[in-house]
Length: 354
Ligand SMILES: *Cc1c(COP(=O)(O)O)cnc(C)c1O
View 1: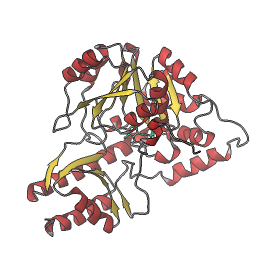
View 2: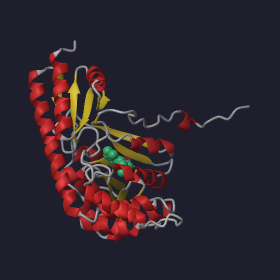
View 3: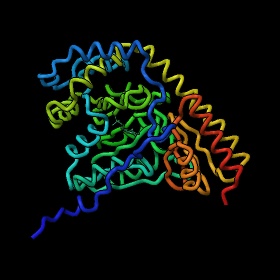
View 4: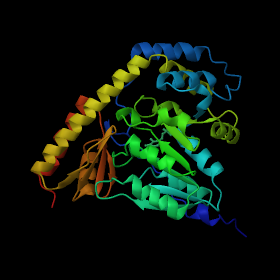
């Protein structure tokens, strides 16, 4: 006799982030900006006051309030999660059943399908065009035809860095009574948020995270924003103490200096633009680089003839990026990191790949 895993677990492909030590990490869309010494001191001081023998605040009220102030929201509409990833997991596994369909756009963040598979939800996908765009009309038509219980997409999107305008997202939400989850993990880099629409739609959830623009991937802190009926349900479905006290404490410090956060976002956008411009000029010089997608996030997406060759050659030099054949996804880094990357990739292209 031996134990048999069920089929959904047997076929589950785990998300495999790149591990190991690399001098330059441009693979995970993190911020390249590290907290100032002053911020680090504040964090240490705050952590000194944590009651380590006590459970955390189950609703992370203080950090939710500070997050809400930063984005101009009603804190009653906010639930904190152990990263927005946890919130995606909670929402998909509790708002959908195995009879329901989940509509996703393709390509998009792989975890949406992953959690759908875990709860045996049927996934319907709409394929984006060659420029990774998709019209609101196509999405609305598919919703009418497939009647999904829920639609989820990242905006602007990971991995292509393209986006759907707020006007179009609003049209999609207004067209349906299905749940619409807009993952705005990268919206701090673009100006088409629907966070301000929360009061107008009772079928909308917007997801946010501290991992990207805010530069705190280490603490695992994300937020779901929705009207009361949905927020109550998310809070009921989550585990009681899902955000630990250390994370809540650091998060409170992070949101206590909103102007610093906005300055950092500007710096990251400048870095992204620098990388984009340099890749455009490389692509005009070398036919190896076939297409550089116009970015709306903190990373660029580049179509190549031999992406794996470039990926491996950069890795040899201690530079790690993401390879998603036929594309490379490269996170905007510090000036030093960007220039090293551009220098090394220029050498690789110059030495000719074929
Ligand atoms: C990185 C990312 C997340 C995950 O955010 P966490 O808060 O770190 O879990 C969610 N959605 C998208 C589209 C992402 O790229």
